[in-house]
Length: 225
Image (spheres, one colour):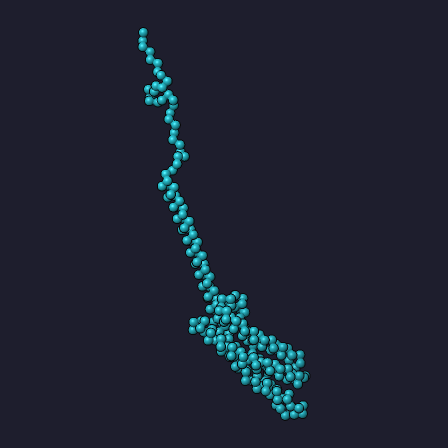
């Protein structure tokens, strides 16, 4: 009788495979090496540092550009102020002597008796007020350039333009009175109003000239000239 061989349960198959089945596959979620994790953290930190540096440099560049624009606005405003103040100064000098002479004649006229006024010759060759330029001031306010000018310099400019505005208001009132009461209708009334007008502006004009002369060198220094 033939010899029959019965394999045991733990015997291997002829193809080398175990009866218990194939060996389980290694898990894909196995822990990564420590060196790999360290390099990933370093890379992320470097990226954050580069981004932060870029943002910082961008902000610094924007601030520099803004400051440069402000300096340019201030410089242009000061240049216009200097030109405008020089023109206003010239306008005062052109009529200042006439205002003083006419004011003195009016003082003598009204100091005399009604009978004696006829012998006093008051020559009025028009009011001849100063019409001040103020375009530089208005533009500086509109563009906010005045806020970028040195505070002390801005204060002096404001003081000058305020006094010029008082002068302009007084001139406007005088011209309005002239239209309402022409000299041909009420000569003494017109001369009395003119006397009061000149009484103010002959005080303001020397004050403005003094302020102009004090401010102009400061404007030159601020402009680097």
